[in-house]
Length: 174
View 1: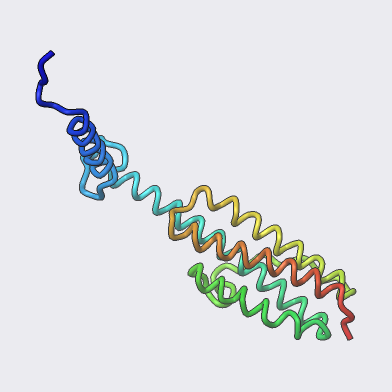
View 2: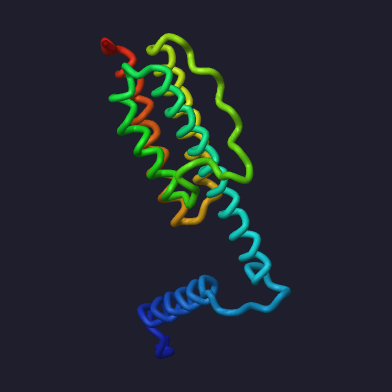
């Protein structure tokens, strides 16, 4: 048999170059015709979804911050332990693009009444931190890379807060 001049190595190289070209073309951010998926309409929908995820996460932070403030006001004995966690929640809210306080136009829903027992209040606050952290973890599936990293970081911090609040509830609060 006679050699055709195409070696296995050159065929694999050509196939790899073709595949790389196809991948780079598919990932390009260039303009697309209106009939193709991934056009401007799809980007607009994706941006709106990101904005909605970010707004929902900010609302959760506003609610959480309000609960911290109420717990600290109702139980001054726990205020020292709550202050750094409350400050972290405020920073999370800022990172999510929300205001440092609840927006003036639409007040945040009133959180439930704070229990009269400080330990119970701390345990409920820990449960709320877990709920919010879980919700942010689920939201990762729909978030873009940048927002997903932020949500993952804030969810991890929330899980740590839940642990710290649970431990704080075990300590003597006097």
